[in-house]
Image 1: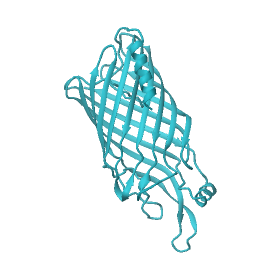
Image 2: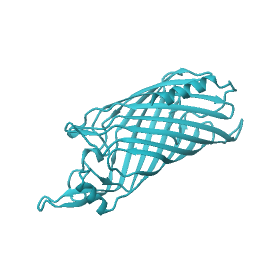
Image 3: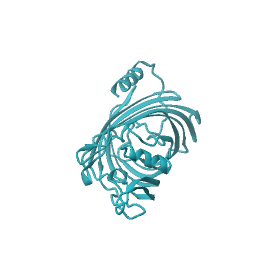
Image 4: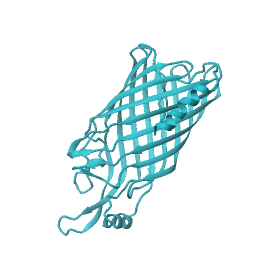
Length: 316
């Protein structure tokens, strides 16, 4: 995972210099973390929406998969709403706090009837709840010609862990909105501006710990690289940008009661197409539509169909 990042940093360093251009203050509507920080005492309010459509399994596929010993489940779609607030402590240091709210629709899995011992398909029409909050700090190391920042923070177990199935049973820990674990986050972000063109990359590593019911989520690494081109609005507002983003999410296997779940984790590579509109000095709107181009998932899991990210940021 580190070699692609090193290659991008090398390319950013050897490409020719160009005049500084506007790129906004955040990575609205994408997975790439911007290396830019807020000015001292400036603040930003960010609102985001994510919609993920997944492959679904019918009842017969769920039952046959469970009979083969797999921890199989199916989800129609996931929606996540998020709110974040950032503050510039200094020109180099920005801190932010974010809280998500999750909706998982059409969750289905194989359960066992306590009376007969026979398997049947159980589920929850919707799993709804607050997710885990995140505190994050970003420190700018370089600004010209290469922008470089380090990122660090922690995921706080504020999320709901008491969601239940249609029959009233507690849903397993790995399908709750919250994990119950305190998870450190470390990363790096870099970028460079070339007149109307901007190239950026970031890596974020989530170090997981044991949460509730002895459940430990798999550690994960998110690598993303974005190329953005200013289409309209040179020297004036509004300004429109088009972008292309390549991302890879690697997740290790979940663990519970000291045993790894062989039907969790894996690698997913996505290609995203985005637009970003900077309406004025304060308001930015953006979106990214991502399709998977490679999925290497462990065991038997439903596959992702597409992912939509929408966001808006107001700087003040």
